[in-house]
Structure formats: C-alpha cells, structure tokens
Length: 203
Image (cartoon, rainbow, N blue to C red; front, side, top):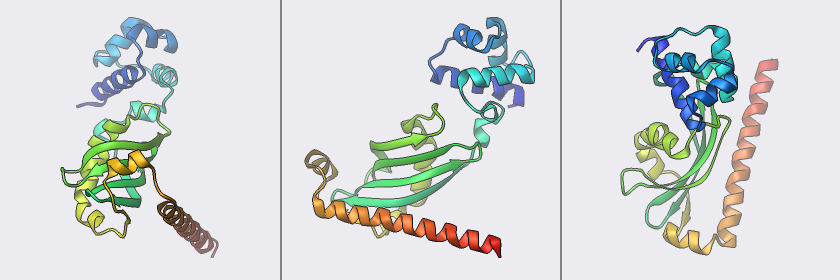
C-alpha cells in the first residue's frame, strides 16, 4: 500500500472513531467535502496544510496520519500480575508505541482459554482514539501469548478464589496491603533506576 492510500485509510479510521461524518470533518478542518472524500479514497494528494488541518480537527498528532498502521510498533511492559483461583489473571502494565502513544492498562485475562479478554479493569491513553478491546486483541494479546510461560511462572499475588467471586465481594484488607506493597516496590525500583541513569549520564 502506498503512502497516499494509507493516509486516506488513516483519516477515515480516525474520523469514524471520532464519530464524525465526512461533512462534519470537512467543516472542522475547513476543507471541502469532496476533498475529504477524495483523500480518504486515495484519489487526491493533499498538501501539508490540509493534512495538518485534518489532524487538528481530529485532535491527533499529524504523525498518526502519515504513519502506516502496519508500521506502528508497541513496546509492552508488564508490571503487576494478580492470579485468581480459576487461572484468570489481572495483568497490569504499560505500552509505548513508535507513534508516541502512551497507554496504561489493566485487563483480566483467562489463560485457560487462549488469553481471552474477560474484563477491562482500567485503561488510559494519550490517544483518545485508542479502544481498549481493539488494543488488547490487536496489540497486547499476541504479546501475552508469546509471554504465556513467563506469566504463569510470575511471582504473582495469589487470590485463593475465582475472579468473579472476588469482583462481587471486593478485595480483603490483607490482599489490599500486599497489593500496595507491590505498587510501592515498583515505584521504588523505577526511581532507583532513573536515579542511576541520571548519575551515569552526569558521569
């Protein structure tokens, strides 16, 4: 696919994700309806100014429009795993992409059923167009499948009851304190690493 084609596809995908019609995007970007339609269908080569106006109208970085979705690469980092009795796990971590997306996530994953997504605990991204379930299926799930053995051997916080029961009852105080201790340890290790990197840089 050439650059012009995937530029149009990207505009169309982001426009639909925003819930905008072609005419609405045209009005927001101060571009004609026919121009937007032709650009989306790869029939017109837009100027830089037009691309910039469209990016601003969609409230996204211009780089996202001119980068092929196939070329976007994520680096995933698992931080905490909480394992339930039925082998469902709460996996928490973050992901960074080469298109400058920053995502922090927590998903309930069933490792008995090919890493099936069971629940979304939290999800935050600097890209408003990111959809949790889509991100999980297309980006994170393949990584978790690859890391399956490592995850199952992870020194996780063990909850001795099924996830569904824990969700209904809520977490008990002992488990909560253990969880807080894990968070603090991760924060400590992160600060320690950053301090060391800063010290090495100065030397």
